[in-house]
Image 1: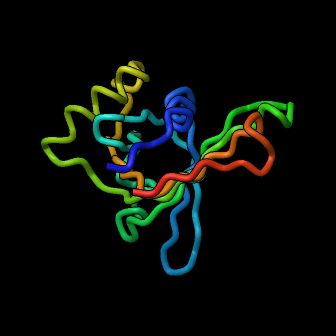
Image 2: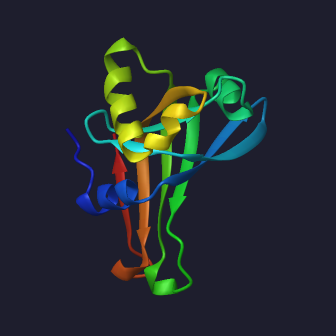
Length: 141
């Protein structure tokens, strides 16, 4: 198995918001969601209603893109990932692990309506300016 660099995983685990980009009929859409990462499933997990544009579009075209970045004003401290993945609703075997990961990170979300969704990671490009301005770490499934 192609292992993801620990620096990438540490960054993804530390953050809490991602921008999700979808596209249907050549019309792009983006949204911002809270997420948790499951190392067990190698997935991004988030909660959202079936009625939202991003979920409806991701169900029509499950090829999605994500962006996660840190919040900093110092150029040397800029970090972020660009991710390609496959969106899907977890099956019975995955839902328990997915809920555990998500609610452990966001226990308050148990009280919110919505369903748990999963994005299987297929490609990651990590930028970390502390490694050098042209240095990127790339992982592909």
